[in-house]
Image (cartoon, rainbow, N blue to C red):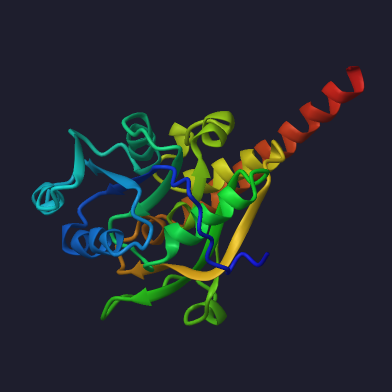
Length: 245
């Protein structure tokens, strides 16, 4: 069966949608609106205001379905998502940044695939960038990807069984502000958790000049090298355990 096929199941597990946001009030209504438009209806939404100083709380609470969690200080997206997970109850976890947008069939396609393929622990999807007027294109986005559909290995395109997330572990606190999703994915790979990629467009990623990854490009690069070394060390440890077993 192709991943692109729509799958109808009697069972509809609850999806906990975790939205972490920091000073993105001007975009949050669009993010929440894209959640309301999902064709898959069995979801709950938890918005974590990560110490914002704008109107984030007012925007979020204007949506009655939102469970609002307000943090007194900015802890970073990784820590905010962990808090959201702790305060959620769904069998499946999915994450959306407050400045991004989902396509309407995002949850339906990914949940359907996870149900049809129980050996799969999590599913990524495809994304496209879109640029706010006047936004400078970050150097980390290759020219060929700026207007093309491509695989998104990030939380905004992720749907994961809660049991798998718990097995891999929470987002690492020391990488909370940049690349916590990348570090989590490295761990999942090292633990040989099966995953797939939906070939459809599921995430519209907004570039507006104040994205965390845009502001901290050099730190992202340094931390990714550190994560790669951590991954290599984990694999060596696993190999040594197998030899000694």
